[in-house]
Amino acid sequence: MRAEVVAMDAAHLNMEAIRKAGEILKKGGLVAFPTETVYGLGGNALDPKASQKIYAAKGRPSDNPLIVHIAEMDRLYEITREVPEKAKLLAEKCWPGPLTMILNKADIVPKETTGGLESVAVRFPSDMIAQELIKAGGGFVAAPSANTSGRPSPTMAEHVEEDLGDAIDMIIDGGQVGIGLESTIVDFTEAIPVVLRPGYISLEMLQEILGEVRMDKGLLITDASVRPKAPGMKYRHYAPKADLSIVEGPEEEVVALINRLTAQGEASGLKVGIIATDETRDYYTAGDVRSIGSREEEETIAHHLYEVLRDFDSDEVNVIYSEAFYTPRMGQAIMNRLLKAAGHKIINTEEEK
Image 1 (cartoon, rainbow, N blue to C red):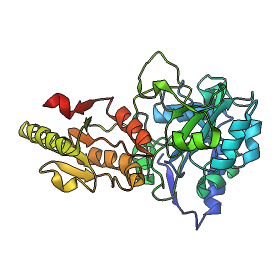
Image 2: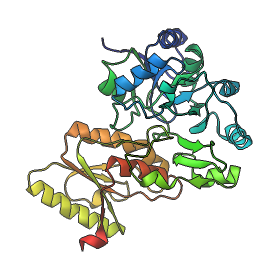
Image 3: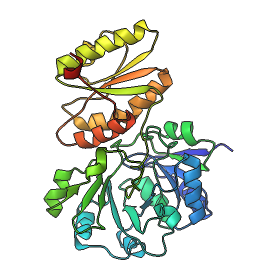
Image 4: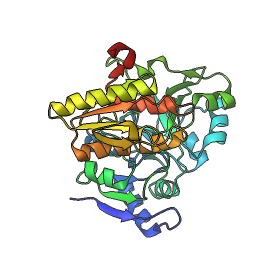
């Protein structure tokens, strides 16, 4: 059966639809909903069968933990064994918002939700639709991104419908999301907090609040034998259907090399996509050129990344070449997603000379 789609926005909440969605969650069903980061696929976090349904709908391996979403700060203590002082401080500064914290779980949280781990990932989103749905659904909603596993995360309800429309009960359409990249994940189960997934809240912002914070050394390394603590970080993610390569080097050399590779691809009968910026878009002489945003406003790059990858799927391109985006604040998060989407395929202009 096709999912029911209900449209609303934060200024005009449809409380009747939210109550209906809450009942679906309480009965073990699945509801996709907007957050400030990406759309989430929600199920009752305390119901093992609901978590299993999430894995099945996404085609996601069941050892990949789910994030438990809350909408009231004090509910954090119901699903955790302890909350370190630094975690409390970070929650005070960054919640509600695009931050997920990993803490030791209470027995009430089933291992089906945590991917078999003794820790639980928790987030308090700022999106008003998300908050009202979480409250209506019982207070604890497990929600990974609402896409088929491995595909670019959804930033619009249309993306959810495309991937999961036949696999879930309801989609709440709250329009396009604000940030466009998943939340920052910080692990508090060790003495020194560790960033397991970069996001809108940068390492520098975290260090300003907490002091010493480490970046997980394995962030840019793929090792199938390593069990993930961080939701969504073990397997290939965010990938378009076409083969994607990142071209890095000085701007003029990057543009020249992408133009050359595009000409070679088109001569071979391939349809080539190019991920450019507002600053470089007009320098490309062929191919399906898409600007991802402006380097002067790096939030625009994060906001459009998944949308552009999905647009190339719709255009049925065969190969994609992307510029690299080592921007000052969000570059780490943007490149983390782009590298995973490309399967870590990087072309360096120096090596191509």
